[in-house]
Image (cartoon, helix red, strand yellow):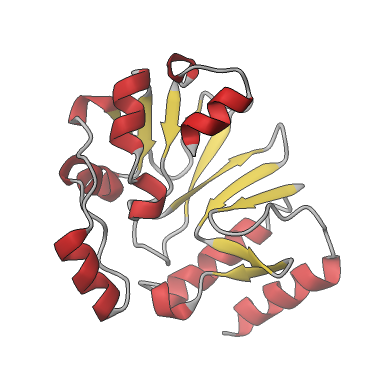
Length: 190
């Protein structure tokens, strides 16, 4: 998928200079080592996520059966430690006019989202998702810490980004203020 996207933009792997990881789930970080190896890009990730990347394993926050299958059969290539830069809450990365790292624990305990104030774009990872054109928080069944997930989602909504790019679902660009307020109020009372 990544290589097809690059080709459609008339780019080569060497054009990738940064890989920004929100968390270590295989569907978000599983190709990081391969992409890094071909591109030479620097990887940015939280400290706990970096440890998972170095071992090629996913965090243990999924339902038991999925976790059992994942731990036995699903592995991804480990990332060389020297390719990883650790990010902390409040760091600004050299991308998109200054990309702010925002600690958003909940889905995983070391989840990060990234916000570009200059562009008004929020890369929410799995802290938020869009299903059926509705903005939602990560479902409880795949959330490590419900309270933290609610607080993280509220923190992201308070940024009032123009575009919310979630890890799953289409980017949220239809700013229905009523829908956002309903989610905001639901999270505040949870």
